[in-house]
Structure formats: structure tokens, C-alpha cells
Amino acid sequence: MFSCRRESQNTDQENFDVSLLTESSELQLSGEYEAFVKLNKEYLKKAAKIRYTGGKGLCYLNMAGVNVSAGNYEKARFFFNKAEKDLFNSENAYHKAVFYDNYSLYYSHLKLNDKAIACNNKASYYLKQAKKTKLTQKLLPRLYVNKGIYYAWKGWYGTSLKCFTKANMLENSAYTNCMVAQYYLFIHKPDSAGIYIARADEKMISQKTTDVESLWVYYTMGYYYNEIDNSEQAEKALKKALEINIKTRRTYSSHIKEVYKALAELYKKKNDGGKAYFYLKKYMEEEGRFDAERFAVMNKATEDFISEMKQESDWHKNDLPLFIALSITLLTVSGVYVRKIINRLQKKKNTLKEQTDTLKNHVRVKQRQEVIELAKKNDSSFLLKFKEYYPEFIRSLLEINPDLENSELAFCAMLKLRFSSKEIADYTFVQHKSVQQKKYRIRKRLNIPGETDIYDFFENLAE
Picture 1: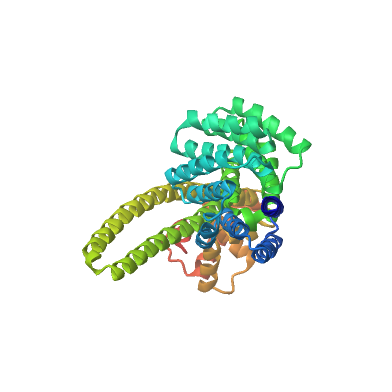
Picture 2 (picture 1 turned 45 degrees about the horizontal axis):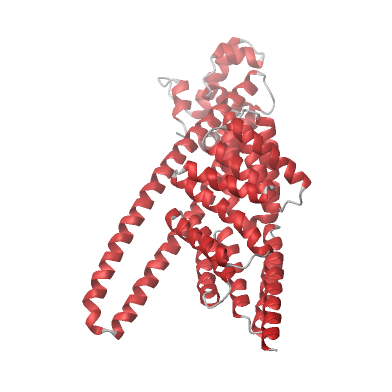
């Protein structure tokens, strides 16, 4: 009788796990944040009602995972701590495996790849001990994918490829084919990547692919097409990724910065400085937000550790010298580690700033050329565009003489662009003598001294 009851309880718990994790995954991957939170609240109550501690832990773990993917690392850490207490008392090895898998992703987002690999290895260890179910079969290839990513970031490319290939053999989905393609793009082998891009595209059409996975596939396709100089297809794929991100931003915002970076590179190649600058700026904003989150978590972790050590020292007064020594060591190591990260980020920031400045200059040159072309055509929109390009110049002229007419402002604008009298006469269809007379009138209207070169006056105005 006891055995039957025990078996029934295990079946109920397995059904709970499958239902909770499947539904949560679908909502997270489709970006439905409110529904995701509501579902996990309901399952949390259900787990408490049936006294299923492991079920509660999985609910907390789901909340930790969604916060990692959204870049809210402090919140993620809070839920990981709650999940750990419940899942480590669980007799289900799968619970520990899924916990360590999620924790490895957390460390990966913090760019602590060695810790990510260590957690991934623990996840694999517990998964081998777990009973074979649909959940364990689904987790295994994802463990290989994640391990492939961590090793790629460490520069262990051979091991990384083996992991991606193993994952693709097990799952053969749009996502796993996409990750093999990502590997080949990462090591600059677009021909090999193209094979897996085609397979990922085919799988995305034939299988029901989630929004987040589709976003990643489209991003990879855009990355690939940009590498082979097919800008039209690259733009199409990356814009599709942006479109999907509108739906998934609240649960997977960490993906979008890579899309912004790819778009910046695409438009830079297309010599469209304006759009390249726009998306590079977007990328820098996202990267800055994630960096701020990472530092907040590292600082909080250090504070918590010191706080815990202080409590221990209060209980054991004789250990106070040890506490002080450990605190100094911890702060020294933390300081060195944080300094390394700051230096790396500063270097990255300087590189991005150089790229941004280059793009800014490119945009300015292009805008100036556009204004010059409008002036040459005697286009009616010339003055309007000039005001956009040199707003301070027009403002300064009107401060000197508020009664200047638009025709006089346009004439001053042409002098600012250093058009000669002959050029102004040709472009505005007037005689050379008329231009000279206009110059004389402008001198009087703006009180420009006779000994001052009129071109130098306008060149230095509003600088």
C-alpha cells in the first residue's frame, strides 16, 4: 500500500514538473511576461498546497531564469537563492541539473565563463543520475549548446565545435543548426556557416519555432548575409529580428544588443553613416545597461559575503583576526578582478567611441554635401536643410540683426559654404555684379568691418 502511494506521488510530481516547465518555457519564449509570472504564482500556490518543495523551487528557478534573460541580474540572484534552498533538498536529480544549467547561464551573462563551465559540468553530472524523461531528453542538447558557447568565449574552439555538433545530433532543430552556423561565423568560415544557415531556415519553416529562437535564427542569417556581402538579405533578416524583439523584449532583451551591433556593421558597409551611428548608439546603450547590472551584482555579492563573515566572527570572537585577514584578501582580489573588468570595458568603450566619432564625421560630411547639392540646384529647401545642419549659425546671424530676410540668410549660408561670387551667380541665375552688391549690403547689415574677410567672418561665426 505504501509503495503504491509513493509511486502515485512521484507520478503527480513528474506531471507537475512537465506541465510547469513546458508552459513556462512557451510563455517565456513568446515574450508573454505577465502571463509567465501569473502562471508561476499559480503553480507556487499549487506546490505549497500539495507540499511539493521541489515544485516551489522550480517556480523560483523559472523567475530567476527569466530575469537572467532580461538582464535583471540582481533580481535573478534573489530568486536563485530561494530556488537553491528548495531544490537542494529534492531527491530528484533532474531538479539539481536544471538548477545548475540556469546558474551557468547566469554566470555566462556576467562574463564569468569558468564558473559557467563549472556549473554546466555539475548540471551534466546530475542529469546522468536522473530518470530518463521528456524533460531530461530536452535538457541534454541544451547543456551541450551552452557548453559550446562558454568554450567558444574562452577560445577553446575545437571543444566548442564538438559540443555544438553533439547538440545538433541530439536535437537537430532550427536553434541547434543556428548555433553551429554561429560557430563558423565566429571563426570566419562563412561557407561552412551557409550550410547550417540553410538547415536552420528549413527547420524554422517546417517546425513550430518559438519567437525567441526565430529571433536568434534571423539574427544569425543577417550576420551571415552581411559576411558574404548580401546587404539586401542581411537587412531583411535583421529587421525581422527587430520586429520579433518587440514581442520578446521583456523576457529576452539580452539578445537585442547583438542585433543592433549587426545592423550598425551592415549600414557601415552600405556607407549609410546615419543609420550606422543610430544602431551603434543603441548597441552602446544596451551594453552600458548590462554592464551596470553586472557591476551591481558583483558589488552585492561582495557585500553579502563580507556580511556573512562578520556574522560568523561575532559568534566566534577568537576568529576575528582570521575574519580581518580574509576580508582584506577578498577585497584585494575583488579589487584586482573588478579593475581588470573596468580596464577591459574602458578599452571596449574607447573602441566604440572611435567608431561612433568616425560615423558622426561621416554623417556630418554627408549632410554637408547634401546641403551643397541643394544650393547648387537653387532648391527651395536649401535654407531649411542648412538650418538643420548649422542651427547656431542662423541663430547668431539673427542675434546680430533680427530683421534679416530669408533671402539674405540664404545668401549668408552660401558664403558660409565658401561659394565664390561667380558660383553664387551661376547657381542663383543672377549677374556677378549683383552678387558683389549683395555682399556689400550684407556687410552693412551685419556691421562687418571693411578690413575683415567676409568668408573668414562667416567661418568663425558660431564656432
